[in-house]
Image (cartoon, rainbow, N blue to C red; front, side, top):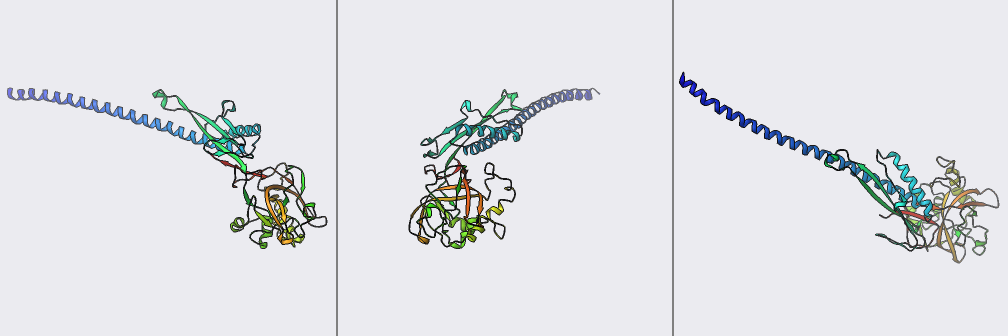
Length: 360
């Protein structure tokens, strides 16, 4: 009996020692788990806030891009361009998912470059090119980072855009005399036939022979569903020389500009939606009434040999076509037209048409 009690006495201290060791190990594990959880929670929190910063940065860039490209169309009028930029920033704030972009011209968020000035990382502007930069800011409040003493940050992004003359494009195969002034809003006679500029050019009457051949004349005149090959073949640039298209009866240009048997003439399509309600003061840029016509200098010769050198372009909004009785008439007015996607040249002379380009 005494022997058994002695053995039990020896066992109990060993159990006590083992139990204490186990408790210490459990305490260390709990501590490490707690630390690991805090690190993981902190990382998750920072990930959420970093994600918010990334989204805000993209939103700020999108708003700056839209404001700069939209407002650049109004150059060289700084006042109008500034107003449009601010309006576009405000308009885009309606769909930012909780972020609000700010732009303050008083703080230098809208900057302009004029003729013969240099835009950093782009280059020199000519006499008829202008640029502007719009900067937007989005304040971002952190969700979890405040536990680390970080309250928030402001994300800023900029976009620089340039408005410059267009160097070339596919054209409507008719010409206007280069001496015609850009009198925007004033009615012009687009049909050169019997006009003073045609007095010494027998057989021309204001039409040009397409570079791809006479067979494409009607298609180019109506500008509907042109093939890629037709567009490329008839690309016209400043200083190019084209020849006259002769022997045209009224019926040949009527089918392109007026009412065609297939209903696809320009004036026919102008009655389609969304153009049916357009007016000269309020129109869609895709309206079939809009024609791009080269403004040419007559170089000499007659008939099909008459040569015309392109000196500029004119964008016209056709208002009426009379192909039914003499005197035949195609009346339109110059419009200030910014052509999307065209090739621009910041050092080109005034061509009557412009394009905008994001440069930074």
